[in-house]
Amino acid sequence: MDIKQKIIIRYLNGDGQRKIAKELHVSRNTIRKYVNEYNAKKQELLDNNILVNKNEIIDDIVAEPTYDSSNRTRRKISEECIEMIKMCLVENKQKRASGKSKQQLKATDIYELLVKKGYDISYPSVSNIVRSLKDTLNEAYIKQEYSLGNICEFDWGEVKLNIDNKGVKKYQIAVFTTAYGNYRFALLFETQDTIAFQQSHALFFEHVGGIYNTMVYDNMKVAVARFVGHNEKQPTKGLLTLSTYYGFNFRFCNIRSGNEKGHVERSVEYVRRKAFAFKDTFNSLEDANNYLLSICNALNNKPLTTDKNIIPSKTLEQELPYLLPKLPMLDCADIRECRVDKYSCIMYKQNRYSVLDKYVGQIVLVKAYANKIIVFSDNIKIAEHVRTFGLFDWNIKLEHYLNTLHKKSGALENSTAMLKLDNHIKNIYNKYFIPNPKEFLDVYEIILEKGLDIVQNAIEELEKISPIDITAEKIKLICNKQKVEENIDISSDEIAIASAELLIQYKSLVPNSSVQFVRQEVMI
Image (cartoon, rainbow, N blue to C red; front, side):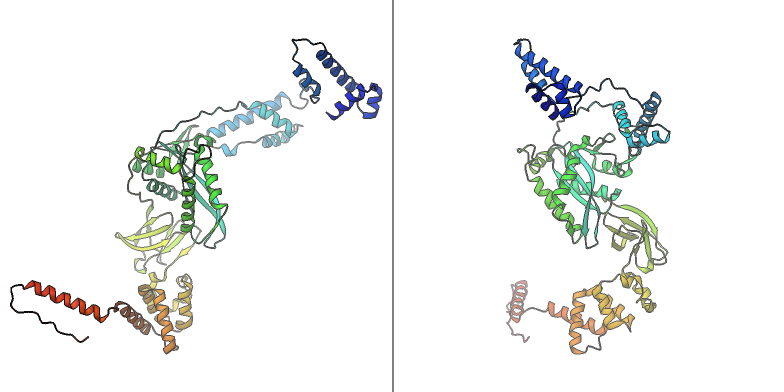
């Protein structure tokens, strides 16, 4: 455009085409083209022809120069090359139909394939051919109207947090969004498995106080067991269990069609940003979930940016009468039978959890929840652990091995159970009971019965009296004394009042007797 302007100005100032070409280093053909176009358009303006649109002529005069490439022919792309590209696109279509959409060939892959076949071609040329062969028609979207209590959408997302000082790691965030009012609910889990999938639904239905008629999912592994053709999907057992118990219908989105559950697609990013862009460190997963719930409540009490008249928490109240009736929470657990091994542990997903040592070799029932493991024998709970998600972790409690350790006390110091103890308890052992591990086991039983704080207070009191003679028997004696002193905290006045009331009650039992009860003072 700059060259065109200079040519026109110099021409109007009387410079010849040869001089302009020499000074601007531009071909005389180009100069002739711009000058002739300018003169022709200018003449059309001066002719005052009412049939001519003057605005269009003015636009043509000041328009940037363009080059006509319509007559150009492809010099390096042969029909054979185009056929190979078409074959690659057909193969991509077959992969999408079989659920392998993430394994399709991209334009750069097709280019590399053609180069290996010996074709002398550039990547832009291949990219342009691929684009022209694809169906480039823009997809039309149909605006939806949603009825009260009908549809709720679910999706997973990832968030990186530092919980319990374990370092930054990925956690899974389960997000629910109602279609009618954009009410949002979210929960954090360690992993994206069937137990977490089921528990998130149970907690959501419990939270809203009812069950939505239809749940919408994408092609997530915890919901889709396998693809049957291009459009049909077989649901997982976990989803069927949820649907059967709670009575809701479900449907899946088409492949790579996140817009079909656009409410929750946006909600995952929105909730994650609003919650964890400002805070990403927590003491426990429970603290993180409580914080996340408070953020969701705050968002649900704000009007929507797209419609200031809609407040999600208010629309939820309108939907409640249209929801399916609330049911007791589903027991979302993976239930299986396991054998207790020689270390008095059961194994669940490559991690071990201890039980009482008397169950070694027996078959027990294990219920694995999203955040805990409970073990039963003959319907009696014999162990409970926080669930871990690593590999080959040992979750051991010392109290499960007391019977064995009383017989093999020498094994205590280097045992895994000892290493897993609370640091305060290990300090008690290291400071007072290394020479006598059996005595420490008795102290540990007192800790289980009375509590660590009471035992520590008893040890501090014994240190003042005899710091080199601290035994389990003395600790137990002081703990029992403290308990008695806490219970005996009644004044003599209260005793006297209680005694008088008791005499009155006895007197009322014999109203016809002429013998009156005589008040006696009792020495306390």
